Length: 394
Ligand SMILES: Cc1ncc(COP(=O)(O)O)c(C=O)c1O
Image (cartoon, rainbow, N blue to C red):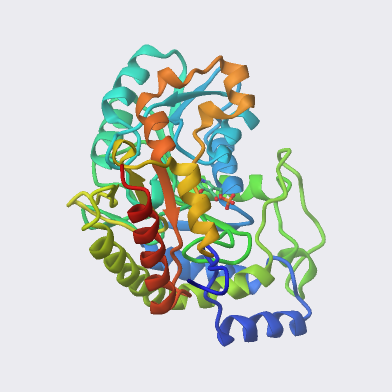
């Protein structure tokens, strides 16, 4: 058994990131400036977007996406219950109404049939927020089709989806030809994400909407600090709307620039770990390995293991506890929105309304997955899971 606890998703930080942070600290400019601009531009080019805006989280990116689209009171926004709270919080922040859907059983992403019905049966729907859960893109053919036919904006929660592809198109790049509704995409650089800056996010989309979001991201000011305090700047600015404080400082961008340079290498390592897990767990009847549809390339943000409850004597919670006793850090993604007291009480939600999400939540766990994990770490996880299953066969 491991002697040291294996953290669930440590970042892989190299000397380049550390050197850039030190140079930033010595440069005299800590907040949003040249490095944030450079990170934005390199990220934009990497995903093939028309425009990009660096912010301090994916939550901020989603919030200002809705603000830039003018989503507000009286509007409804459709998303799923199987996501992190902030996907839904931002809808609440805009005083719009979240419409929560159950998910598809294989990918746990938005169910297009339910989406179609919800859009048809709900008054005031203005936008759809698909979540590319675990890095596996949602069914974007159907999402774009439904949004296009109904004149709805698409704001993608791509917190997990860097880099992911759907039919060869990178998530974050412009939508396929023929889709003419607004489309914005939010990425996360939170500490555990595939590209980690501690806290951070990026919004991509068409230049006009990204410009509008940029205004919302920094107090609604017509001129940011870089354009006020540098030699070329001017002290004058105007405030054109009551914006937020969501800009990404250069200190974070310094990390992001080099994480982006490292991303392809890190992704190859993730894929190698996933292949080892698939190989090992594919042979264990008591568990199910993740599904990947043929038309996608997953970012493999999270490795989802699903237990077969009727074949095991222990449930998910005890399974995670047994892994912890073996010094393996596992987690759960996610406690569905309908199970959280705020949303349960505010909208009177019941687990029966979300049978797939509820059933899958109860049997899911996420295994350690990070490019910082060694082959030895991966072998320890495989050994621990194999042992826990063997000790608890029904
Ligand atoms: C699916 C999903 N959406 C949104 C977020 C929010 O990202 P951030 O922490 O960058 O605001 C997360 C974060 O962990 C997430 O997992």
